[in-house]
Image (cartoon, rainbow over all chains, first blue to last red; front, side):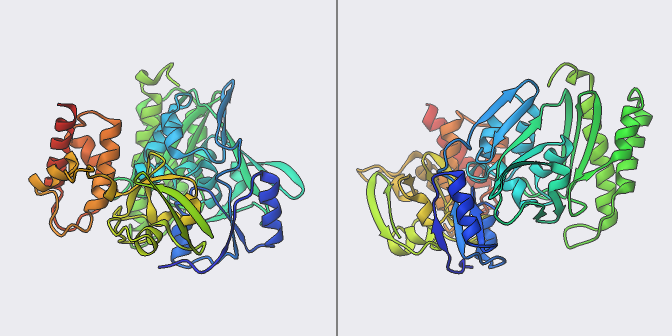
Amino acid sequence: MKAAPFDYVRPPSVASAVHHLEEASGDGKIIAGGQSLAPVLAMRLARPQVLVDINRIPGLSTISRSDDVLRIGALVRHHDLLEQHHSPLLAEAARWIGHAAIRSRGTTGGSIAHADPSAELPVVAAALDATIHAVGPDGRRTIAAVDLFEGALETSLEESEMIVGVDMPIPTTWGFAELSRRHGDFGLVTVVVAEVEGSWRVCVGGLAAVPFRARESESILDGGSVADGRVREAAQAAAAAITTSSDLHASADYRRAMAEEFTRRAIEQATAPSRAGVH
Amino acid sequence: MQVKFSLNGRMESVDVEPRRTLADALREDLGYTGTHVGCEHGVCGACTIMVDGQPARACLMFAVQADGSSITTVEGLQNDDGKLHALQQSFCDRHGLQCGFCTPGMLMTAMDLLHRENEPSRERIREEMSGNICRCTGYMGIVDAVEEASRTQSG
């Protein structure tokens, strides 16, 4: 349970970090909070030659708001998401991430780049159609969240690219429901329901290799007022559309049943009269 | 690599390989064996310490990352005159430990909680301590101890 040897660099800027990644030609790895990477290294599931520590790069730790979009720096810690008041959805999602000692170090950029299908922030990013800002040797580009997540722990980031920030729209209303075996564990099922610019988003995490946007459920919710029958119908549509499998944590049937139930709960939160007017 | 940080108020300097975890550097290189190492992948909480005023898993940080930071370990809890910290005393009084392996992490997590919240409810204590695993006590004594310490603190 000890990491294999690696070199360590602590670049002062994004350009320098990208340069180090480029020099390592695929054998470099960024460390931000390290809350997912350190275990991966300890178990030797990865043996990068160089660890590029971006923690001291200035300008990556801020949250700024322009109208109804939050720009979250790559180094913003889960703890800071929990404490901010612009997006209660993000604060709620952050509350579900691990424990205080994890949230104090884990970062937004790191969680998105790690792309664990059971992690909270990728589900939120996919639900909100977040925009990921990345910098590579050829400059800066933006990537839509749905295009970023390609598989479990796989993204469309190039090997010398790093995430510098994420734009998360602030929904007009939202619901967040998660089932985990123990407090602070990764979710077996994580559901985010949000209304952004008048259209509904339903995203289910933990079942498929990437956060699953339940488009049919979204259409059902977009189609009219949310009477009880419609909530149930939308929840059923989400569960029915997902392909999942059994593992030692839960059977596929159980996961699907829970996806339906937790989608229902998230929709009910989002459409509860008490939520009206509350971001 | 040469790394310098303040440890329980004293400057320490240590030469480590980049892959050395902070937990191992504290224990093996600096002799501060109060920080315990259980799962080595951030699940058990035994190695919880404070880094720049925030709780952190010492097994999920490399020592090189701690360069220039300020660290508090369980050894830093006790007063200079040898008197136990209120939390340590309440863990003794309330049977908050049996084998003691998880205790350093429990104490550091509880200390962080009590820094942030005055008299947290038992439910809050359970919630906040849930990242620290104990295989002996069944947690009742631990919750009692943290609750008692919070009262001592605000009283």
